Length: 175
Image 1: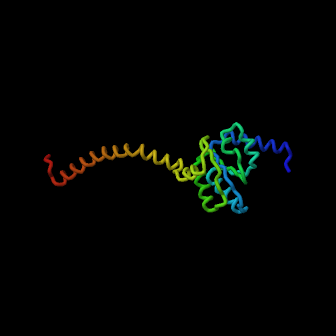
Image 2: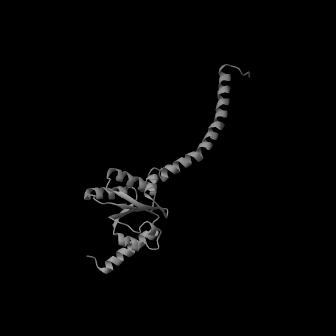
Image 3: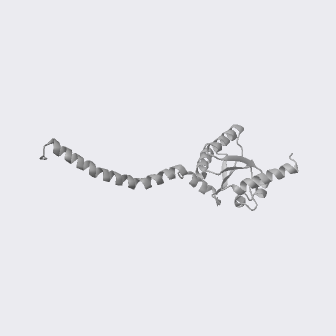
């Protein structure tokens, strides 16, 4: 059993994490085997996140006064947290894919960019494209008109060169 000082340290460490977090997924992991838990942790790390099993009372106390307070109140059952400072879409996709493969892993709530979301919103988030894909699409849309303009300007010179070349070949020009 932990000493009171150790419990206070755990509470303070969790509070510090919750104060700086913007993206958090509260999950249930009942009936997961050790190998499944190991695989889950590997999936979360691969998506750029961190995974932590917590006690419900500890989470509720640590979340007081933080943005995560609303999603960590009144938790029941076995609870874990998956969180990231990076792309929440990547973590949501990874967790949703894992949940499909392991039905005992469930979502309870989430916090994205400091706003609480429900379970349905997590699955909606998982279907969105990631940040890199959105940036690539945006850059393509910005670049496409300039590319078309450059092609059109280049086409005029190219067409003129073709006409002059054919005229020279067919001896249409008098010197």
